Image: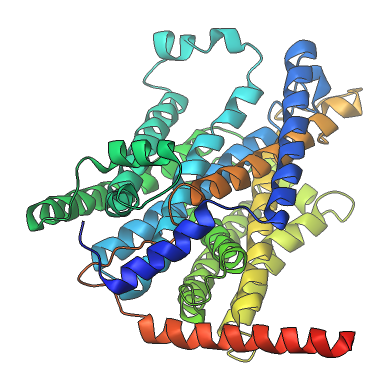
Amino acid sequence: MDQDPKTTRALNFFAAQMVSISKSGIIQLIILSIFILGGLYALIVQIIEGHIVTGMRDNVVWGIYIVNFIFFIGISYAGALISGILHLLGVPWRTPIIRIAEIITVISTIIGPAYILLCMGRLDRLDHLALYGRIQSPIIWDVLAITTYLIGSIIFLYLASIRDLALLRDYPFKSKWRHKIYKFLALDFIGTPKQNRYLERGLNIMSAIIIPLAILVHSVLAWIFGMTLRPGWHSTIFAPYFVVAAVFSGTGVLIIAMWVFRKYYHLEAYITKIHFNYLGIILMILGALYGYFTFSEYLTSWYGSETWEMEVLYRLFDVNEYWWLFFFAAIIGVLLPIIVILIPRFRNINSITAVSAVAVLALWIKRYLIIIPTLETPLLPLQDMRSEYIHYSPTLIEWLLTFSGVALFCLLFFLFSKFIPIITLTKTDDTKDYSELRTLVMKRIMKRKLKEAQLKEFNKS
């Protein structure tokens, strides 16, 4: 496959990183492995002893497992929507970030549904879902939608990576297994005009499919709640509310991933401030939409003054229960990103990443507030009920499985970056040329490193 000199230099740069792991990387892998092993221990304990080791009881039948499920499925949609829309529109600055978005989609869609299995008391009956599931049930809709969405996301990621797989196939790696795998996955792609034409057509088709599919999947997930006659759930705007919240949190995760890989792999010449600014503006707009939906949801519930709806609101606004979590999720997590990104004085790479982390945490808490207060509010008055059967608090087992899921997400991301470049190497006709900017940035990096080395030598002397 023909290569231009710039592509060759980029391939050499990423290939060197793919076959080596720094000391800090080894430490990070050990830490992630410890968390995953902790989650494995928690899973074994839960399988042996049952759900009694969790905080879930007769009333609060869902806990942070379902919160994690909604969260991971949610952040996957931002990757699908952003990568799909940017590809269809041919946005020039998409190249350095589009693969990161696609990887987020696939990994999140794999991890998210695993938390549903943790909520089930009889995993031996999992096959009954396929054998006896009723198509009238929104849960069956969700299973079908997520499965289709995952398959489509994998196909989209694969098609978008074929050109780079062909480059890696022809690269002289010392490892024979790499050459065999790349040769198998590249499918004899050599970059002929006919192959490129068919590949672009396939990418356009998958982009057009993945965008409405992503919206449909989270809408189906929202309908599981909206079609339930429970206070705090029975709402007509839950579907668009969930979609906006999902893309909001997913965009935040994408920005954080960009910042991490930019620092870890020294991608300052590829992922520049302009990418953070553009995604920051998207995050700001989504935050404003999410804030509007949040205000509309609670305003209509408060104005209707239905007894059981008000019981949920009382819990959310009670300083002894959920007020501080609600304040952070609904106010701080929305206003802070908007203020920081809107004012140019505050807007820089680190600040955009910091408010993205705040938004992601706020959206996880928001999912928690959607699930738990509602389940803690019984539809019928209860008397002389033990408090642990009404009030929910996560146990160590649940937290271990939660953190292990996050660790597995990071580990899979890291391993993927060791198999294929995290930045798309091959150029397309609409790819903007950042070569001059990259050269300038690399010169600045070398000057800074030289000054740091000189300063160290001066301190030693």
